[in-house]
Amino acid sequence: MVDGLETRLSTTRKKVNYAKWGYLFIIPFFVVYGIFSLWPLIQTFVYSFFEYHRSSNGEGWVGPDFVWFENYVNVFTRSDFFKYLGNTILLWILCFVPQIVVSLLLAVWYTDRRLKIRGQRFFKTVMYMPNLIMAAAFGFLFLSLFSMDGPIINLLLEWGIIKEKINIGADVWGTRIVIALMNFLMWFGNTTLLLMSGVMGIDEDIFEAATVDGAGAFRTFKDITMPLLRPIFVYVFITSLIGGIQLFDVAQMFTKNQGGTDETSYTVMMYLNKTFQNRTNYGRAGAISTILFIMTAILSVVVFMVSYKDSLPKRHKKVTANGK
Image 1 (cartoon, rainbow, N blue to C red):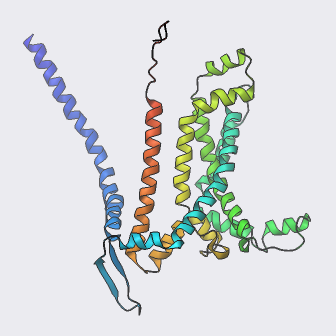
Image 2: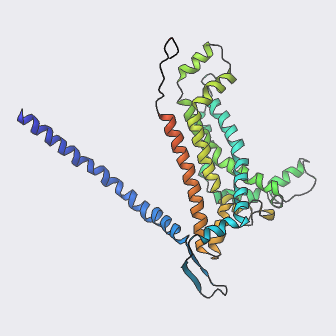
Image 3: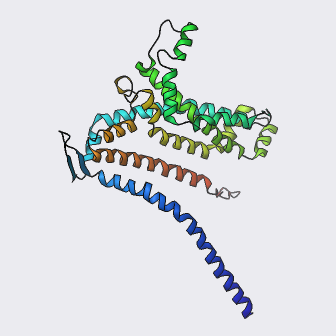
């Protein structure tokens, strides 16, 4: 019996020793994350409480001087920030609404076993390919396509849809729609694959039971697919909103960093980049970054809470015959 106890103790010690290798393997990740992500984030937060910029004559520097919350007050009291934030949210809505509708229809269509669609791997690859293209390259491509001498305008002239060349970049809604179109093409494939994985995770017996009960396609989609798809749908919604707040590359390239007519397509990330690049005040740029980080963190917490809540097992209360 003593020998058996010693054997178990030695086995336990070996397991503990082997477990240390797991921590050793994840150390490089935390080192890289700490150096290139966490430390710059801390520095940005610290600098948001300082005044630090070039002097008016451009020959020297002012600061860094500790100014408490002056940079945050400056950001919230300027109308520019809320104007650019409103532009960003509007561009996200123009992109997300058609994106979620098309992606949801494609996800249900491709996962319907009754249709038996062939070549699904090919279509999945084609849909996801725009997501692999750099956003800056995508913006430059559309800038060439929709220029006054570009192929899109020439085709519209040949088809008689327009009578003369138009400058889409000078039109407020034309610029917004093209930027939303670029985001749609870049991300609808990724959204479709996420929703497809959610639909494929639903037990097929549930759909078969609904068919036996006489439920049509629309009622099955409304009463079964959508409720069970809610966790992944909420995840797509929040992550898309976070990405929408960070919209920068395609809008900057297509509007040539001008934000369109009257800066109606100027995003909040373009405003942050302008504040930083002009060296008007690094502290104000840090405050803008911190505000956006807090907004992103809040949205991430919402995603976590919703996902965690939906993953908990539901507790059903027993109801007695007398209703107690």
